[in-house]
Image 1 (spheres, one colour):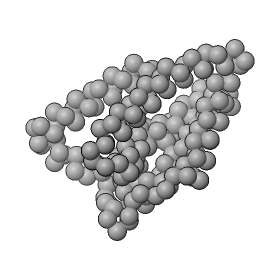
Image 2: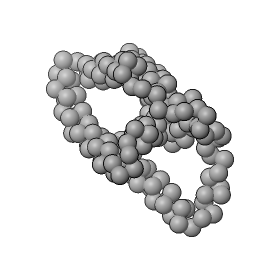
Image 3: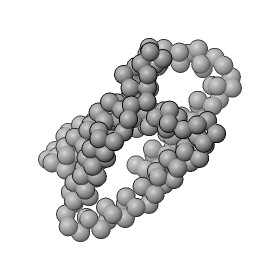
Image 4: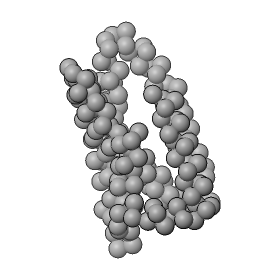
Amino acid sequence: SLCQLIAAPALGDLSDRYGRRPVLIFSLLGTVLSFVMLALAQSIALLFVARIVDGLSGGNISTAPAYVADVTEPKDRARAYGMIGAAFGLGFIFGPALSGALAHISYTAPIWAAAALTLIATAMAYFWLPETVHRAAAGTGMPFRNLAAMMQRPGLRRMLVIDFVYWFAFAIFQT
């Protein structure tokens, strides 16, 4: 979660600068790599490195909604974001169930299955996902640069703090 907190704004900025598609593909490949490392881990150190790689790759959580915003009309965005939330919810339901079923094969079978599914998603993104960012209109700059100024605005500060507490609690719940 800490790695996602660090990576999400940076990946979001990179997706503004270089495009959503390459950032999504790169981060999906990072997730595949992290699952392979996790499945092959023979030490606690490698296990932690695998989770760090996955956290940094999982920072694409800022890029995926940006992509959805790029491809939907403003009137349809709430529904599209709701579908993202529903997909996450289904993942939290079916992921552990599938893992539990695959764990009867071996302890690493669920990890290999996750790597395979992510590799399929990567291939789908590579072959079918069009780019949406027009680089001439893309943003630039380090995303953390304006954090202090944003925290000076009471309404925005409250929203940022609430969002941080929510995701922090959610990460603790998952752990």
